[in-house]
Image (tube, rainbow, N blue to C red; front, top):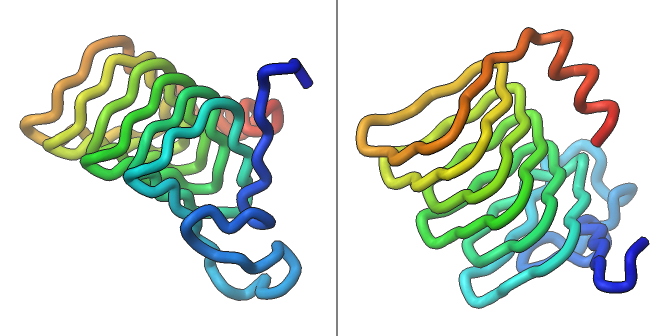
Length: 142
């Protein structure tokens, strides 16, 4: 790990959301939050969680599902099965399914298998389609 790199294990930290460990409730869907007043710089790794981002993240975010609220802002990379954006993303998105809501402002390369872009969303950058198998192989590298 680089000296300036922060690695967060969301299930154990419970930032603004769950404080459960990954083993305590395997049958429940676990969700964690980066709240509006928070700015996180570094790497967030939460492969089994849904992560809702209302604040600012500068770095790489990996989760099962990532939701960026209207107040959320990402400068970096998002990697997940599903990425749902209502806020801002500057960087790169890699996901099986991507939804860009009408309030989304995205300047990113978006690698996806399925994409939904609502009317009103502002999107700059490439949106290259990738077959199902390709994205599954990419997930192994996250």
